[in-house]
Image 1: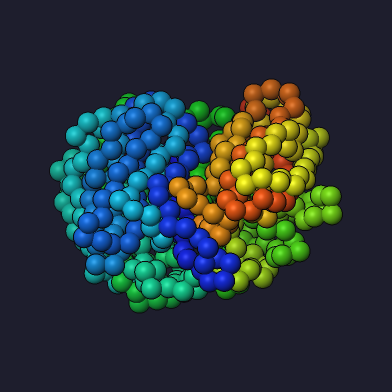
Image 2 (image 1 turned 60 degrees about the vertical axis):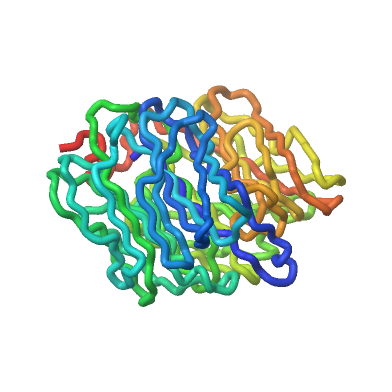
Length: 469
């Protein structure tokens, strides 16, 4: 597994949040550009319609195909794949026949997957209920297949905004490795390298509910040496997971890196996240929350030298807003220390037009080449639609307004710096009818691990994709 992204879902709220717009198309950015020849897997859930159409594309014009789909007359869940992709693919775009609320996406990159005719077999179920959620049985023909399984709680189709589905935990299936698990909306993605061909029933244990799920799975043929492996030593984001949480939401964040970081653009004055605990235990540090021109900046917690786990559980103490709060989590490998020399530069700006571009935001000077820089931007009226330099981690969609509840229309971005030159960020806002918006941002940086240091060992379950048996 090279990298993975999991989104929250956009829902229509009430009062101010009733101004949200049904989205189309949706854009999901990978944290890194792909390696040439690798395989991309996109799984999604969206509202059902007999006339629903879905088109998947990307910024390098790869060919996508539908692998498997199921629906229960309320929610459609599907897996799409693109094999032997062009190098430097990063943005995947999903276009529906009409604007939709209630969409959720996961996006993964793997190597050692066959370049063509990769699908061995598939399975799908829309009748599998918790606590054992499965996609049904399938029988593979080839040994060493990548088994990819995605599931989504059908109860989301009738939820009131911000209520969640009350899942308490998700446990990956036997020998499966969780890629992401969202207990608030009840979705998960997991994978397994099946050593020998034969029957398999991809499943996971879901506690706290007896809901029925859509569950889909695909078996992809292995091809040793196909594609491009990531650098084993470079600092790199492995996964980005977007969560909407409320005060009772437990958080699961499968991770493998030695740096775990999460952020919310909401300030302490709105939601004071005062403490974080995790299992396995980690030492959590909160970034300086001193005011920026009298205004509270985004809140960021991180753990370096982290004890990662595919079953990491977190408790974040705080009181979210009326429909919950967006938290964006990052799993980073080969990270060094927080760059105290670069500090926490911040910026404040008031924009005065609905479409506004501004630059020289949060200038930060890394102490060493090769650092990973994060820039988080809180806006009173979004959305933020473009960042430069770097990658926008915020999930964006056509027609989006500030009332979006998927990422609260705020800015989450990162940039890999190759020098010690000062980096500053430029943004473009699209605030619709709002002529005046307030922007508060901070930047932070982490060094790459020393070549003499030893990163946390990678679980053996993740190594199996490198050399299929």
